[in-house]
Length: 171
Image 1 (cartoon, rainbow, N blue to C red):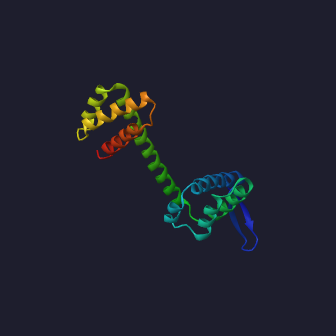
Image 2: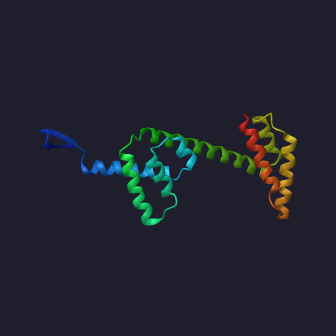
Image 3: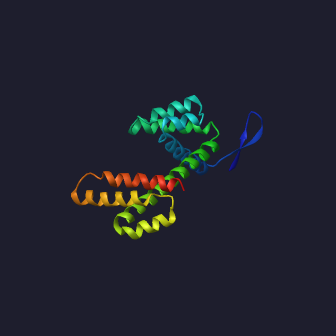
């Protein structure tokens, strides 16, 4: 930061240097992009100023140059408001999405293991989740294998995924 002189009040004024201003604008631009990718309902829950909300909704339908100009406008609006709560909210939403992705991949791994390892994987799964219905899992694995070999649509494969998701989420 460096000092300049305010001629009206004859007092020194502290300003950010240009590099710091650019870093802050870049951070606000990244925040604006993250906010613009959200659906309308989460944006409404954030209780944004009306002008900022409208700008974020509008930018979702814009392309190229118009979107670039709109993001500059959104950054301007963000500079006028407190963004700490928005950053925290976005971080919370990203953490929630990351947790959902991890759960999804864990269920996918179990389904693939059940399909390839058969009874061994079912025994291990039942040891971890004793409340699961072993008979239904065996039947779905068997049906999914048949569907896969016959080249039919993966109806049982999807049903197995749903059953595993329900079983793991009730843990």
